[in-house]
Length: 123
Image (cartoon, rainbow, N blue to C red):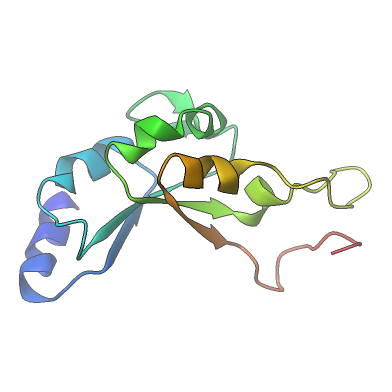
């Protein structure tokens, strides 16, 4: 995948590259200018294990300054921002991930806001 992304970037301007793997983004970071191509670290489920660091994504969320060393932004599912109570299906208070990411100098992109995903009753 690394060689494919690099070969494509020689032919067209690539504005964003996102990946849920730390080592992939680290390996291509030197090849791209941050002013042209933004590298975005994509968070998966909080309990999922990121393969190159062997840490859960929830533990990586607590170390956003580490992510800033190789990425200019993060892509998080909406439940990282607005968690939903699994029993009542009501929204819980928002988390601080957006503020924390901005404090670390990261841009924040949110995903999974489509209507085919279950919404909280009080959304």
